Length: 208
Image 1 (tube, rainbow, N blue to C red):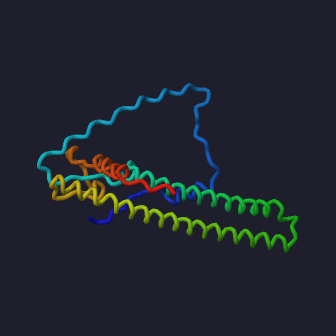
Image 2 (cartoon, rainbow, N blue to C red; image 1 turned 90 degrees about the vertical axis):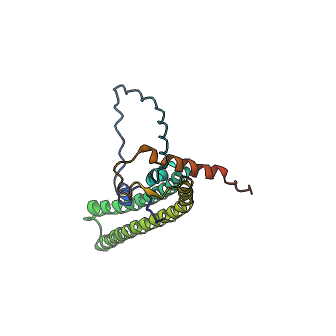
Image 3 (cartoon, rainbow, N blue to C red; image 1 turned 30 degrees about the vertical axis):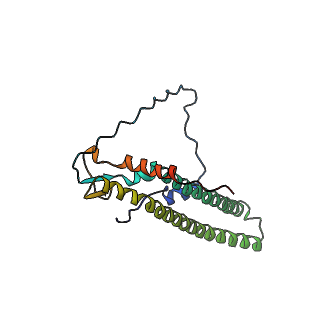
């Protein structure tokens, strides 16, 4: 089975762009009544698997987003992104403070002090760029590591499902360019259920 890219995180450029801008608060419609939340609807029962079918498919991105393992991986990536964003914001504030100091007080600073401040701003600018590149690399490495671990756990389950159903082929819906298929051929929900069941059945580590 070939390696398939699974996305566990937000776009890195968007993640770090938010560190350069003040946070905004969503409108709450103050003063206006809010509409009541719609009641949750039960998920429809999965369609039966067609007898004699030789090809089926799964949505790998949905498995990554909905399974316990996928959610845990997302949590680890998002935690690292938030940590790097906070560090980037701290660096950006120090740079902005020095830029403000230079623009507002540059006329009263001595030549030596102004030159020193300009050098600090140049250094902080380069350090911020280098930090963003390093942080993106660290996040990508974590994504790749988690992706590899996820695939090692998921793919044997998918192979077992295919063998049990006597399939000739089990495909990734996205990579196959799937436009339409019989709903019963979608084994995504079953794959998520089996993957989560392996976590429930796994022995718990002994308490130290």
